[in-house]
Length: 133
Length: 293
Ligand SMILES: C[S@@+](CC[C@H](N)C(=O)[O-])C[C@H]1O[C@@H](n2cnc3c(N)ncnc32)[C@H](O)[C@@H]1O
Image (cartoon, rainbow over all chains, first blue to last red; front, side):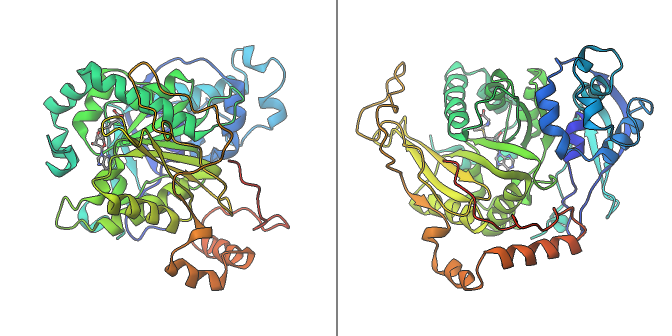
């Protein structure tokens, strides 16, 4: 599971209000490089919950990777920034798309229900009495 | 052979050996790839070359998702069968995978997905596979959550195999109740084998424009190397358009209250109370939008 996916995931347990963000406990990560695409990042940024992403990067063992507050777009998307090692956009790209949580747990902030992550796949299946309907 | 849905629940039917059999059959690989290409075409994403974030519902072993990857998109797939997901992992599909039951509702934040596809999966929702399963509630949870997680104006294209007309109507009516506009596009309606039905849904448009035309509607047949040409006609003929304009009685009652600006403002207030992040009200809120078809 990439941290981008984590940023979009919410718990669906009956009775929770937002079920977001899911707290992340990480036992194992892996890194898979992918090509940076500035336009994709520009499109996805408005949908990112920066705080949740920042917390997730720290939980995954990269507390220094991102700034605690979202950098201004002018900085992120500055001309040529994508080519500069360590630039804000390179860090964002790495955080969203290259860090994978392989083993760990997601914890619903409202109900405390935990969802195991095995082989990179979160198990979001609910028990009968947790289903909303 | 009867269809899989009538044989066993999906997580039982798609066990380890079936998952492997499914994913090594060159016939199945080819069919699923072709359906996925068509679904992506019907999704009508902006032609700007920018990768999108898509959802693949009932992604299985990743055959459908591979088509999304080939087109450069990122995707999240969810499936109820661990065995199918295991095969997807073995095949190192690019998408992120979730073990989840769509009938429980999709656990995703509102408005985050640029589009969704589902290939040969949603018909499973019409069955009650456990004593606790009530298809109507599962359909409601599924379409409601799908609607919420899509960005405004985004589409979902769900290819399905219905047992009968009633099942198709059931899927359509629950999609409409969730707020979608759209309908069913049928390719190759005259061929029992090649016939494919796609539920083409748009999120957040106030009126229904026309649906794309199905392939082979005029009686031409589908051969394996000829997908027919659907480009010759500008005619906006649709195959069953549904939506709020042709709403059923129940929705008409709702309509008295209007799903207009007031309804929207009320709804937004409700969402705020539930602690959701809701955009501020502006003069644009609840404004009619141009349809994107
Ligand atoms: C015919 S396979 C198609 C898989 C993939 N989309 C493809 O094109 O190859 C149908 C898939 O739907 C999944 N499925 C059925 N019911 C489901 C549910 N309630 N939630 C999630 N997935 C489900 C099955 O486990 C199976 O993997």
